[in-house]
Image 1 (cartoon, chains in turn blue, orange):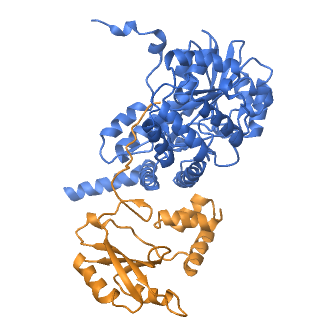
Image 2 (tube, one colour):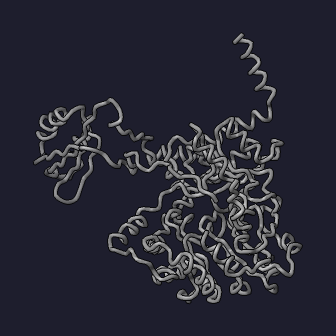
Image 3 (tube, each protein chain N blue to C red):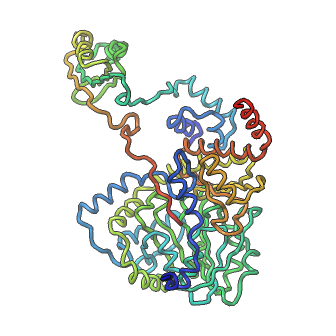
Amino acid sequence: MNNLERFLSRSVQSVPPSGIRKFFDIVSEMKDALSLGVGEPDFVTPWSIREMGIYSIEEGHTHYTSNFGLLELRKEISSYLKRRFDLDYPNYRDQILVTVGASEAIDIALRSIVNPGDEVLIPEPCFVSYKPCTIFAGGVPVAVSTKSENDFKLRPEDIISKITPRTKVLILSYPNNPTGAIMTREDLKELVDVLKDRDIIVISDEIYAELTYEGDHVSVANFPEMKDKTILINGFSKAFAMTGWRLGFVAANEIFIKAMAKVHQYIIMSAPTFSQYAAIEALRNGEAEVEKMREEYNRRRRYMVNRFNKMGLECFEPKGAFYVFPSIKSTGLSSEEFAERLLYQQKVAVVPGTAFGECGEGFIRCSYAYSLETIKEALDRIEIFVKNLKYPNESQGIQKNSMVVEQ
Amino acid sequence: MSIEVKVLEILEQNPKLSAEEIAIMLNENKENIEMIIKKLENEKVIVKYHTIVDWEKTEKEVVEAIIEVKVTPQRGFGYDAIAKRIYKFPEVKAVYLLSGDYDLHVIVEGKSMKDIAHFVGSKLAPLEYVLSTATHFIMKKYKDAGVILEDGEKDDREVITP
């Protein structure tokens, strides 16, 4: 047999396919199935932003931009970071790089920093890309479990025992996907005390920063002692409902930006031009729309948390992003089992917590980036499913009776 | 934003939500929301719970027209008296007083174009103080009361990993 797989690189072979995928391949073929699985806004990009994208094409802006991105956009990003999050990157020519989504930013940040064998601390549960991207960059991912009793915040004690002389990077991702956890200024302060005197670079993925429901978003880069050691990643996908435009950015010290730009220019060249023009419009005139969407997510968030708690699936209150992460431990099922049975019995797709790391066992991720009607219907079905799990005898009894009638 | 405005915004989107559901969404208690809704109804801030129907998709034949009406304002009553006489006709769905080329903007609904022509010719135009009318039939509605009526933007998001 011609075993072509032997040609694949070891790093690629070592990375399993994403755990989210398989359920949703089934969903797409299942009639009447409802999904709470998609991790992108259900809103379409606000019209004025779409319109600017169209206009930029009409104007003939169809060429490459600078590798770093349009200067005008970088300037807007700089003032946006200052205005919204009190983050200073005044030297936007050298401190900001426009990327193809925050995803590319994660990849090039890791590739610019990690040497073979360097350890990268990855708090879990987390976005599924950090570990594979670390491996592709030649690094060694080190999982750090966060705990539900700490509201899934990263505590200093969680990382201290994992730090070794080879530790080079810590990836922070708050508001967090999948838990919705956030880090307050006080939480971050404690972490900063551990990090400030160590040679550890923080890659801070803040793509959900605008979707913070209580209090203001705080970045680790807001701490002067960490500013130069932080690579800040953000983008337009979640806040401005611009996932398909593939546009993100990195803000960091010139040294890091220069290094990342090197990788970026050889593999990507530059981010899509019309997306960049649309992004300028988003930053200039999109804030009211962001506010509207945040308000709507917030209402759905409260509704969803309440329903889960009522049906006995204990749900910690997420303060950011658009996911809830209820515990399904009371059902006695594993996350995978729960998700699979729910899909086949009630035709609702959720993502098992284990897709985001081992410590996600006992939880499921449900997105509320869906219309309230869909959310309501899906939760009704989950409620029936959970009831049947808890009182199986009752439903068995009903089955027996109906069999008698049939005979 | 006041809690009343928030409740109104939610109800404008979806009047079928219960007070309890709204309370959960706004992190308020149920009794408080019930009270607010009652108050808004009593004060006629909430005027009516209305359903927007795309009649084109049903078997019912409905024709609507916008009629520009020029009138002579009446001494002592201005435009109000004539507007009142017009809005009392059951065929009339809406009456607005406008600035500009004409005075009253009247939306009329009927079973057929003939129906509407008859209404304008026999009821509206002969009214005292009405100087002229211009009838525009509505051919198609694209957006009504803030809702896009075409089956355009459905949820076609594909599952993407990660």
